[in-house]
Length: 396
Ligand code: F6P
Image 1 (tube, protein in one colour):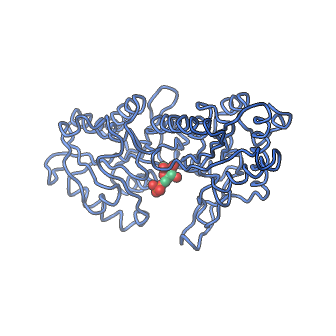
Image 2 (cartoon, helix red, strand yellow):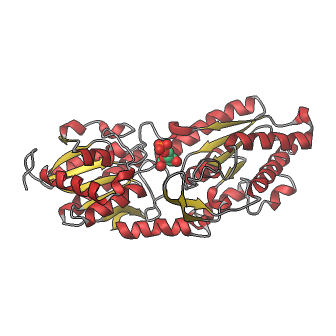
Image 3 (cartoon, protein in one colour):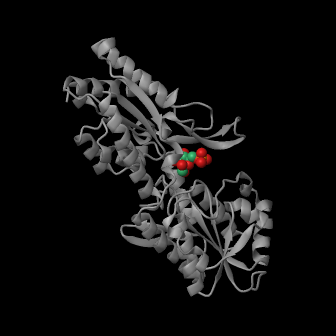
């Protein structure tokens, strides 16, 4: 097949939230494609560019140096309309005309659903997990997670300095969508007084119709009394710490606990990190009197967690995964996602990857998805355990 750019081509796009290391993956794909006799067409802004035919020839020379930088040189976007079959059909026809014989999609589970559909409709696709959340169940690692985790730790350490100078507690809201990896491991690394994880405070989700969004979205299963339980638990821990002479505290809370994440306009922790901070301050005022209370501030780390130069780990993994994806395509494989299992880069069917994601969403025990040994370690290191914080009752 010969397209307008001449010769056989692989298309590549980045989709969903960007993550550091995506550029390293793009570079690897372009270089591996040359080795396999393909040109690479870079598609701008994810599936939006795929539908608009917005692509350009990426030469191996042009990707030199990009592995060092964060973000994605291709741009990224989310596109709801890509769920419509006729929208995809037009895009696939356009891609074929341009000589695109296979597509590499770097992104999260939403992006993989699009890749699965495109594969099934005739254009082979291979997914690569790229998200700071580390929330692709079938892969032990996603590109961007290591960089984001290091950013979280660096920023939490920075905030801990000023919290210590002013004898304050800071409630830090950490990204991660529905996954607590950044919060748990960030908390472990920076010695947080408490981490509040969705996996430990939520008892699963169900798919439900949202009038607000006009579609079916995951909804948290109701858990009345949870806010009180979180407040009590953290307050007990902080009061115990203060009695023992600790003057400043960091509480890391996963955005899934505080954010508007269920598409129903409701939050699991109404008022988010701000409300949690007020509750902690009020509880310590009750115990130690107004003058002795622990002044508490909320800080949402936000998008700063998604940018920055990728760590070596992210660059190396991106190189391995990008190269693997091209080799799969050149072997005639399709509809697979590249994953890390142990230290091995391998792949599984996208359908299977999505089935595992759905299972997690529906699961009644989300906590199974975080490493139990590391959660136990967090408990041993005195990080607040909301399920079983009896130890905190007796003081630190
Ligand atoms: O998936 C990455 C992520 O940063 C999540 O941690 C966060 O919930 C979401 O993207 C934010 O998305 P947006 O860029 O659409 O605000």
